[in-house]
Amino acid sequence: MKYAVGVDLGGTTVKIGIFTEDANLISKWEIKTRREENGKYILSDIAESVLENLESHGISKENVTGLGMGVPGGVEQDGSVHQCVNLGWGEVKVKEEMEKLTGLSVYPANDANIAALGEMWQGGAKGCNNVVMVTLGTGVGGGIIVDGKIVVGAHGFAGEIGHMKMRYDETEVCGCGKTGCLEQYTSATGVARMARRILQKTEMESVLRDIETVTAKDVFDAAKAGDQLALQIVDEVCEILSLGLSYIACVSDPETFVIGGGVSKAGTILTEELQRHYIDKVYGELKKTKFALATLGNDAGIYGGAKLALGE
Image (cartoon, rainbow, N blue to C red; front, top):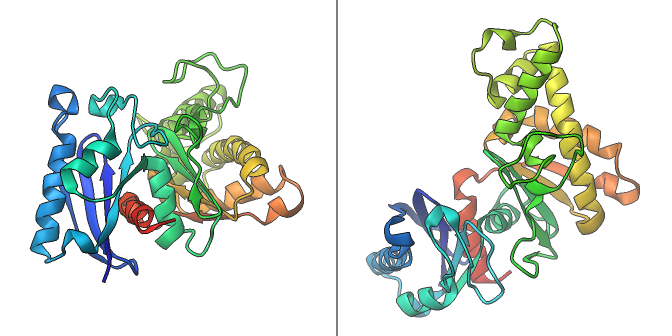
């Protein structure tokens, strides 16, 4: 029996899983991400924890095909990163250092790309080979899979869809320093921001007016209950997001868009509205692209890491 290790490196915790080659998750756990001293202990902590758990399960390194790791930043083709702000890292040769520490073959990649690979392997896009995953959380991220392989790009930044420019009349500045980014309208914070704007522009009655600080969840809950203003907000959010996805489809032609992140908990109202708007914006066979909700949740990263280690 062959095994693979999946690692999802986050700013607060590191999620780790051991898988069999037939996708059976036999163990998963978390350790704290120690960011002190510019994150100098992070890789050694992961290596120590992985080796301890392999030993406790009686798995020899010779039977491990490798370790796939999602990293919150751009990962170069040689497995190095130039900066991971959330970890305190500058330039770190992740692949080289982890292979020395573990004695395993190590395959690092951007965390959003890893999550997309996990959803393609055993999640919302299982059975597909051409997938775009969209994560709608505090920000908007993306992962692109073409012919079963992660699209990395020249600088490791392929899939950074949250910073596609969608509007030229925007005056508020995005976290990236530019204006009009997709993230400003379709992230969890973006949906709440859109709600505040629309509430100010209209006197239409809505249950949202009774909420002191409106969240994206409030908007979608109200929309599902039939609140007309909330439905208008959801319509505008999906109009903008579907436009961005139509651009991506013209380049990558995915079988499925997988929608993940906190906003995806809104459920099918989100995917159905997105698909409705999307169909109006694309032509030909692109209209056949499906929309699905991510199903692996916080485990998508470890599944994707294992899949990367087992071979795309």
